[in-house]
Amino acid sequence: MDERPEQAGSRPDGPAPPQSSSSVRPPSRRETRNTRNTANILRILTYLGSQRGPVPAQSIISELGIPRSTAYELLDTLCQYGYAVSLASTHQYSLGTRAFELSSAYSRQKPLTRLGQVLLRNLVDRVGEAAHLAVLQGSDVVYLVEERAPHRPPLVTESGVRLPAHQTASGRAILAWMPRPQVRALYPHATDLPSRVGDRSPSNLRQLTDVLAETKRRGIAVEVEEVTPGLASVVVPVFGQENWPLAALGITFEIPRHPDVDRTSQDLYPHLRRFAGELGRRLGGDAR
Image 1 (cartoon, rainbow, N blue to C red):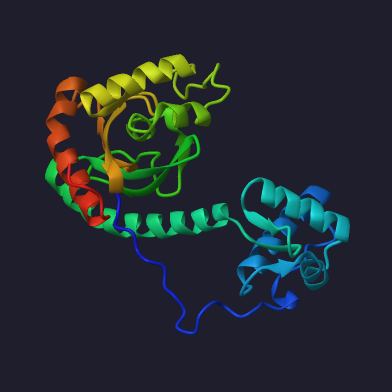
Image 2: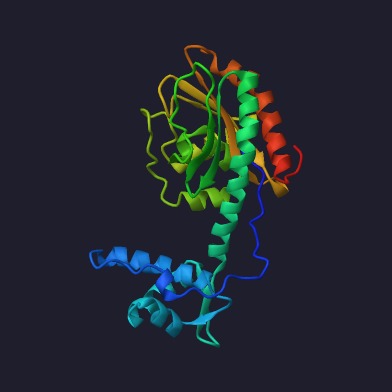
């Protein structure tokens, strides 16, 4: 259930003009120090994003009314995580690459959702079971679209729901095709991974690595009662450019209606691969 990326609209007259400090809401006096810092970080990002170019720290301080020491502390944090860049030669600041990555992620997910809704409806009509589209965010999966089938039970995979990636077939379908060093980076302390239902999910990085290797070998991710008792899911990745796993397209079915999960998974696989391939092509990916 992915969609084709849309290009963010551009202004005909170039970048947005500088925003006045009055348009950025100051934090309330009731807010705690941590909350104020969080609010001020967002205000700084909003302010930097509204400028035509790099701005001096003093402009940020005076425009937003943030104490000098606090402003520098927050700017240092933003620079440390790549959301801002400090130009040492001019003592100015601008948005960093991570801020642009967030923007591009939104641009990708919006078309994913739009295109995914259409394809999911067709997939559900074809197989008669519920289908969903999800993306990876950190070590979680976020469900973008869910299309329910008639006379089927409601699922937890509604739009906007976030679940740990290692517990879900959607998460494992994406992780299996990612480079191993990146998977390890997502789970730096994965000695005790939680399970949602019983002890069915991988409990540490070693087990997860084995599951991902098997998933890639089979070409499909299967989850049996790890998210919801009585339900199983079968999922394939959606590949973008350079065969990068952009998202996961899956089908969830009731085990009492389909007790042979392996057989059902294999029966659903051709449909999933066809629709995931079509979605990937619409997103500009390579045909697979």
